[in-house]
Length: 174
Image 1: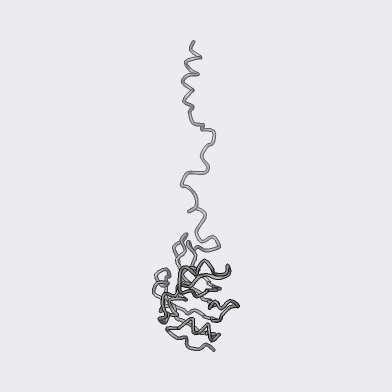
Image 2: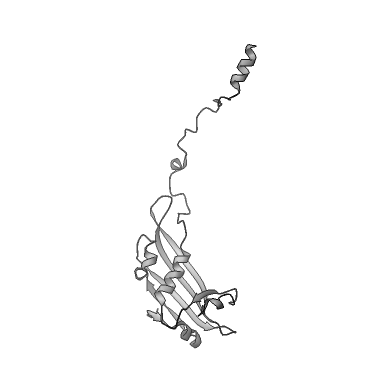
């Protein structure tokens, strides 16, 4: 059973308290994500853990799973894309501290102490996980469509005329 997720969070406070959040968010509540989808139906399973590492860097570790409907770029028909996103974001309040982060972290720049929209953070991670060119793994269009339009049974004996053939004819006349 999933709990209701808050709309806004204070991520640093959650990390200091070592809290965990899990629940569901509706895809229709993520307008930027919906721009890339065929339909806005479905939900995202969210499992987040906030904590501090050994050098007191606040971080969020999460697992996001969902199925979204996108348009196949080959056949232009809808297809289901399964997304499973693992994220590990370190919270920083200054761009200067990004370079000092441990390699395993992706930076999450918090510009001030205002609450952060949980939907927006999850939406950003899902958008980054979308395939650039969605397409079916199996052949989704007939083989005839893949041909170049030229008849493949054309006679291969018809060699192009060489531009030097005229010179050969002139040499033979002499």
